Length: 457
Image 1 (cartoon, one colour):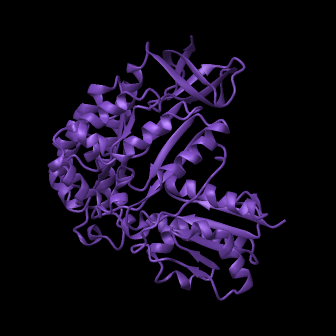
Image 2 (cartoon, rainbow, N blue to C red; image 1 turned 180 degrees about the vertical axis):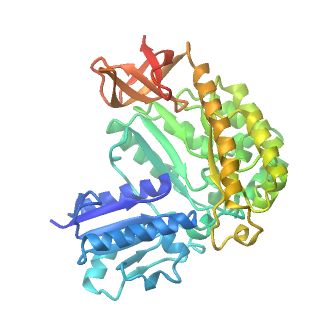
């Protein structure tokens, strides 16, 4: 039996695609082994979100070659798309697979084995309009199932290479998503997480319209928020998944801030299985910087969305991403962004010092000193630590639940840990529980600095 090893870099979409490719290879008779082991085939699902991600992708490809000189080394994904003009020069790589050809991985390897001159399988991602369909039957080592429902992005933020590596918005048919979720629920998965490159754009390509055009049209033509909501495909998808037997939770990935409308949030609040964890990518709290980033909202508009979420949900978790040291960000701009973060009081803030991404507009803008970027990141991180502790403390005394994931031992006592709907890590004293059990009770305090303690009711 031939062996194959996978290594994944980057986002949850890549993770999903790796799981799907792994199952295709298993169906073709391959045995999957750990990446550190000797294998006949190595498939590296690469990332290119930053120059550092490019470098890590190259390192893993070279590492695979060193582990077995005779192996077939496959480079797949975003790094392939961003470096396609020079990747041919890398002698570590045997086969190159673009982002919209991963579902053909078995055929591609077979074709290479028959004719080794055929080793480049890249469709022009910027002209591709069809969603690359995958089906998975299990998720390795997870209690929650990540489901890819959308690919591509039409936003073209000035710092981001993703539209060039993932192409335009392409959505998965709802009936195919539903079939996959039913199968996963029947296999025991209780939490479904919807993910995509630009999740808020789900369904927009069904009408052959860009996100920006459709948002503008809906905003200008819908006479009410209720009418806006009835035309939102993402909301319909969430409602339908929540209605599947066996599904206990529906969680969503990162959202575009402009999708937060009154009746969209109001409708979500009526879905009992919906997890009130909203990740809204802010990137900056300074309007000048947001404009330079080509983000199409203001800080005030973002804050209005947060207030809507908090109006319709009891203690929702609102998390975000912030880039510090974006080209042209002055100390005054950063101070404005910092004050906005303090005002919003996010549960969690993911802080990224700006990293040059070749091929984007921001790469040619005036750059901020590296030491200054680190300094600004440290300042926001202090705020983040305090906000996290404050939000977790606010949960003490409240009824909550966790999805059991793994055993944790403290002072000789065994606990089961997992996450609440708000994605807060919680532990419960183990009482013959099993992975994937949902335990309900009351939060009584902190077990550790990071983990809250739930008392089973």
